[in-house]
Length: 137
Image (cartoon, rainbow, N blue to C red; front, top):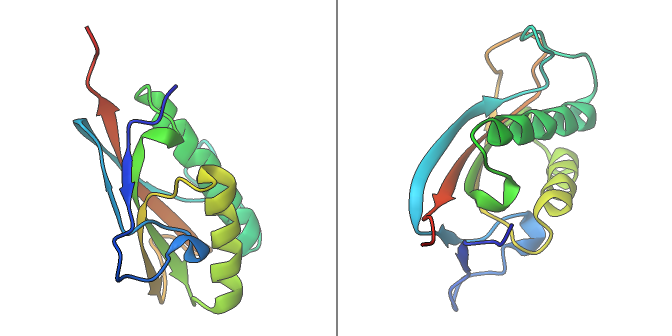
């Protein structure tokens, strides 16, 4: 499926790609909001694992949530990432996952370092805004 997003990194702002995001993203179509996805199993329980394992499982769950509404990662224009006890090592792990998922077509992103998340054992959560493209006639 083609990528309908327009990603913009205006002159005068730093290059955000090494940090895993674009400054702005837009696309014509219907907005779809994906709730925070975390390293959960089919019952909602947090799957044990270190930060890297939780990031990977969270991205897997985000992919499933997008597929459930007929979309894929290429439709995502914005993500919000929530990291418990954020540090540079975790930023590097997250950055690698973002680049594996979107390569050089990174969505806009806001990362928030938090003290804790909704359930015990949660170390990471990601939500998304996607755009369902306008149907072509």
